[in-house]
Figure 1 (cartoon, rainbow, N blue to C red):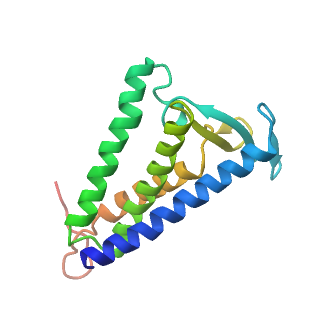
Figure 2 (figure 1 turned 45 degrees about the vertical axis):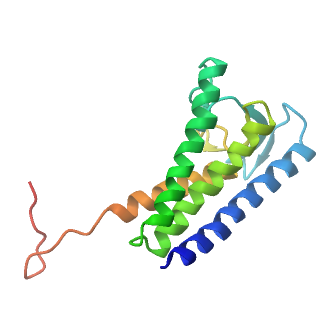
Length: 172
């Protein structure tokens, strides 16, 4: 892919994540009251509006305001700029890699918008699970970030060469 193709693909994909995330956040802020919980699919999906001071699954929420602000705004912004630089400079990235990076960029930027608008907090509203086995509360942007990371990790796992006859090679 050319730089222009990588940029265009990433731009549209990232914008899609930002728009979908911000629309779902606006929708659930509009229809749900603070503390209200809506149970869907026999409790497998809960919708419960909350503002998260920390990162994914409230990691870092206990840090001081200054430290949390520095890490979750400026640190995240630095990571996103680094990802954008990688995307623009690496001619070896395939379409799947570009889309994965765009998922991370879109989710990260959308949560960054929340942090700038809501005094360092992010609006989360989804919780999944069965019985006592549940996720933390998250949002659509978090899904984009995790999807992008998972695709990049899975894409980096190269198939190992095989020996003649179809036997796997041994690596020590």
